[in-house]
Structure formats: structure tokens, C-alpha cells
Picture 1 (cartoon, rainbow, N blue to C red):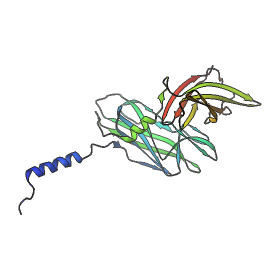
Picture 2: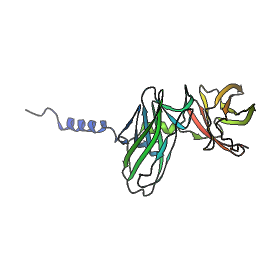
Picture 3: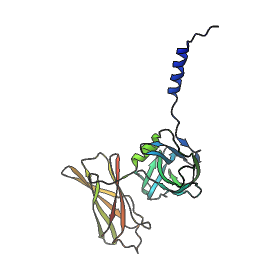
Picture 4: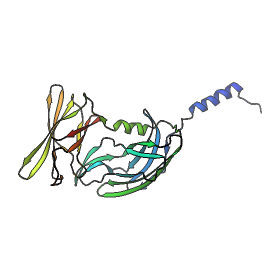
Amino acid sequence: MPNRYSPLVLWITTLLVLFATPARSEIVSDWAEGYGTRARLIAGATANGTQAGIQIVLDEGWKTYWRNPGAGGIPPAFDWSGSQNISSADVQFPAPHRYHDTYGTSMGYKHVVVFPITHQVINPGSPVILRLKIDYAVCEQLCVPVQANLLLDLPANISVGYSEELQLSQDQVPDVRSADDARVESLQIATSNEESWFEITARYPGQPTEHDLFVEGPASWFLPAPTPMGSTLEGQDTLVRYRVDLSGVPKSATIEGAQFLFTIVADNHAVEQQWIYD
């Protein structure tokens, strides 16, 4: 039977097949399954170059926690000691969300979260092995501890396809605050009877549709999610007052000179601001 296709048609068809083939996809580890969750390592290209990350997927109704988990939560812990050809691995946290349940207000994530990783390679010309033991908690009605052991091999001079998940998560990591961003304007202590709390005023440029504030103090302090106490307009800006209960601060703690880190969220943009109380 004669060939119905000319060499030109076959050549064009081959080109179409080649160009229709997607670029090499991101590199991923196997999933580690847990109760209500699964986790894996991923690596791929972003706007800032090749990036790695920890992806946690949660069943509907479940949540996991930020580094300051709030009421009833447990922060994630990362152990990279089994890795090869890296000197350090810094886990970045996307800005959290606040959730309310019977335990109070917690801070964390639902559905899916990706923590970008900045790792320092010892020998750039050699492969990297990322080996992570992560302990984290997931919660629906009750909190469940989860441990996942993850392994990802990264070839030397890695070049992989674009990772939308990593880029989106990187965009959600708070920036260092610039002059035009939202900011904390004041931090004062108030007391009444045996109670004490921080009164915080944050300034948001314009009138953002959504805004929030999170605060972290010294390692031994428990600081809950700030409670919004009302807002006012001042010129073109929105001023929001927050209250932070200090009952979780150790009795022996010295507030004078204590360092705080604020995460300030305005719509889809988050920034960090350091503050030393004096």
C-alpha cells in the first residue's frame, strides 16, 4: 500500500510533536502519607532561579501550623542532618492565616502549603541530596502529630521546569518592609488589675480589603494572635488597633529590650518589621 504522507508532511508532524512536548517538569520526592495529610519535597525553576521546597497537602477541613502556632498548635520542626553537599537549609514561611476553634485562635494553613527552602551548597559541581525529617501537626477536631521522612536527589547543575507551586509560595513569603508598606506605628503596655497586654497600632496605606497582623517575641514567650480592636481612617491610611495578651510571657521575663517580629498583611502582600521594645 503506498505511503499517503509526503516527507514534508511527516517533517511538519514531527516538529509539532516535539514542540507540543512539555519542558522537563519539576523534580519531586515520593509522598509521605500521614493522617489527614501528605508531604513531599519539590524542586523547580522560579523567577529567582532554581528553588526547592516542602509541599504539604491537607485533607478538607484539616490545618497545619505556622512557626508561631497560636492556641493549641505545634510548630513544624525540620531536621536536615542526613542531607549531603549542603552546609545549611533555611525554611521560609508564607504568611499565615488565622483560624478559630474551641481551643482559641491558631495561625497556620489549610488545603496546601509550600515552604520554600534556601540551601547553601558546599560543592556546586556535585549532586545534592536533600534528606528531611519533618515533625508537624495537623488538626481537624483533634490535633495529630505527623512525622515524614523525605528524600530528594538534585543533580549537579540542575535545570528543571518552571514550578508554579514554588513561585506562588515564594510570592507569599513576607518581604522586608519598605517605606511605603504597612507598618506597626506604636507598641505600648497596658495593665488592669492583674492583667497586662500590648496595645499595638498598625498603619495600612489606603483602605485594604483584608488586613491582619501577627507577632513573635523571644523564644520562651507565648504570644497569641493579636485581637483587632477597631480601625479608623487617617488621611489616606487605615489605622488598626490590636491587643495582645501577655499572660503567656514568663514571669521572670524582661520586656525592656525584648525583640519582636511583626508580620503585617495587607490584601495579598505581607511584610516583616522588627521592633525592639524600649
